[in-house]
Length: 438
Ligand SMILES: NC(=O)c1ccc[n+]([C@@H]2O[C@H](COP(=O)([O-])OP(=O)(O)OC[C@H]3O[C@@H](n4cnc5c(N)ncnc54)[C@H](O)[C@@H]3O)[C@@H](O)[C@H]2O)c1
Image 1 (cartoon, protein in one colour):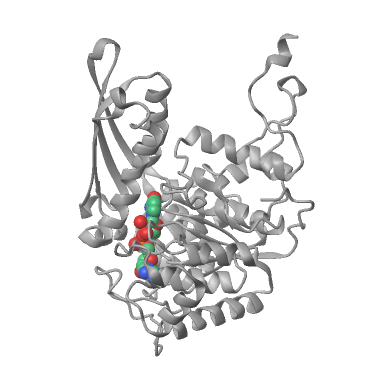
Image 2 (cartoon, protein in one colour; image 1 turned 90 degrees about the vertical axis):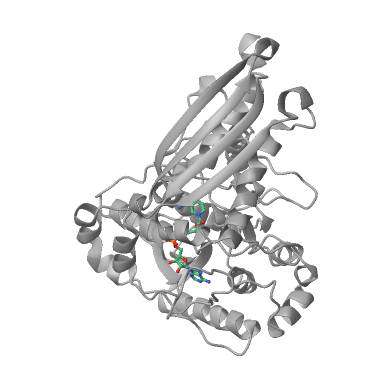
């Protein structure tokens, strides 16, 4: 990837397109509006709250990221959504039950009720536990994709947007492996006309986005844009893409803790993770085929961080198990338990128990915001194709073919900030620091 010679300014409106207007998407949109009205703070968002060091530690130059790189402002964001469930933003947010109705939703009811989802490209074949009435009808998948492209163009014109980005916040679809239909654009387009079963709706949104030059991030573990034909298309059209599966909750904790064990050369014999959650996402994941997609995404993390092939004595025999249990009383307030069996000096065993009473959508919403703003930045900087520097936000980071993903959150974070420095022509921070001792 070439270093950007210039970054176009973030002028005008940025349309944020959200396929899926459930818990995560409504929490994101409501939080942006609350921040705009001074009612809440965008906590958890690097683009809004984090600083970046430039130059030496002795230079004392640490601006906010948003003052260092030219990002769209919150006031310039407008939102467009699709969902098979026709609820407007207020109704959907109340149903999701993430945000307090009287305290946080009622004060912005006018704004939230004004966002109504467009009819979705949706099929219960790919998300078994949902029924929807707000669904597009078309002769085949190609026509569905063309209808989505038309929605994108219309949204842009109606809202007088300068630029658009799309972040998939839809349900987790059944597990689909990349097949011949995903190898080339020609095969994919032919497959859409023939209604190929390996082409799930999320791929149609990704196709529509790429064809319209709209950067695309995938917040779920579905294949969506993570295959050869779309990687090539994104590179050729200069459109940034990234995914998959927002890194929140238990996996966030895993990628914080596991690098710690490894840096101290502590062994790991087992990691058992179980969750109870009761939101719509939990219900969808109750279907074994959707859970399989999620499980693959969650299980990969430890292998990549701990490298059992490099450290067979420490990690060669680890047993890793992940369970998600649908338990309605908990709603979006998930509980994730981890039992971690580690061992130290001379092989002596120890145990760590983590009980994370977390709020999934509260952790996911700032990720949606940062991805929207950083993808737009990448696009204005002329950086097309896979944006590996955004791995920080994902459970299954998309990487160049043949390159293993980096899961260690600290390496991901370092990479993200160094990419911002590189984009702006600043020196990378290596933390070597020998110059302070000359
Ligand atoms: N909440 C988190 O922290 C978190 C973390 C990682 C990944 N995710 C993923 O993000 C996605 C959204 O999570 P959520 O908690 O908001 O779930 P949710 O069930 O509340 O919302 C998902 C919405 O997507 C809609 N949908 C399904 N298929 C669609 C389609 N083809 N087109 C348009 N809309 C469609 C559903 O009707 C639903 O309203 C899920 O796939 C979830 O696995 C969430």
